[in-house]
Length: 383
Image 1: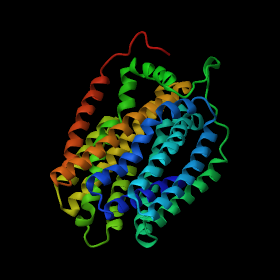
Image 2 (image 1 turned 90 degrees about the vertical axis):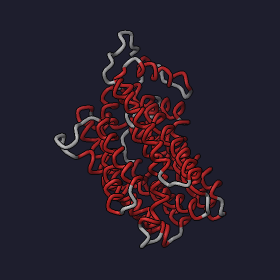
Image 3 (image 1 turned 90 degrees about the horizontal axis):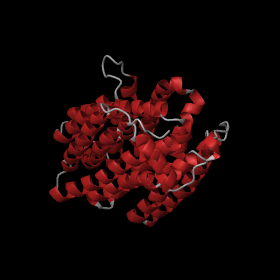
Image 4 (image 1 turned 180 degrees about the vertical axis):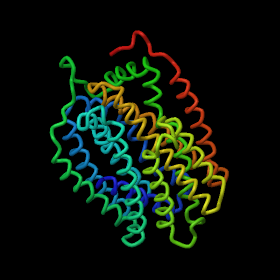
């Protein structure tokens, strides 16, 4: 909860710096790119480490490293270089990726597999509240303290998170037959073969990717239109308000009853698609807020159910690596789509162009996931 507040503080701050320094839509897309791609690049390291070492100490180490690198971001922001700032941010997310993978892999060990859906729903609600609070604080902190001051505040949240994580019990993974996985592609590919032989599990691993691809385009659009649609306030606060509306929706989505939205992550994806298209299609503040709400509801619903399904279907000795594959898929898709969306918005001089392309690509991946859910598992699947 504490580190999440800091994450969203810096999201707003870095976005504001990128816009104010005239980098255009491509620069805004780069903010999401450097928040996403490191998770994919760290897959050969973060997955095997989470299946080899005590996950508690991976969390603590990741929080410490993130704090130090966030101080480096503060220095880059004061130096006035948006590209240096984003470079340091890139390395911070690399370090954070180790902790994020370890944190997700600890959940079954703490709550038991029977409570995974409820635990992930609670986690999703917590994420939503912290998302909302962090964005609100980020908007006001960027306005009152300056964007660089908000980044320095972010560094302190990671240190507090270290203190909290210190109270966790030992969380050593279940290592079968004494064969502890090593960082590198070999053991990640073993997990990939396990997933590939089980189409329904592969669909679960891919489930976050379609909405995250659409999210990449819509995130650029949101940052570009916020100042115009909420012209009664400043840019940092406008971005914060619009992101807060989306964040509230992400907390509502996982707790909606099945009679309203079925417990299928692919259904949540369709809701998110409708939301981002409303945001792209209409300049109306009211319709923008409805779109933001549906975007958040669909993303939150998808995220919680896909995470719970993945944790329930994966044995503990592979959970870190399969989780890292999940992160690889959606972070790669979302990161590159944000970059492409920024380029397209600049090229066509249209803040919504990237959202339409991103949603079309996301829908194509959604169709593939739906097809996978109807396929049988391989008889020769490796355990």
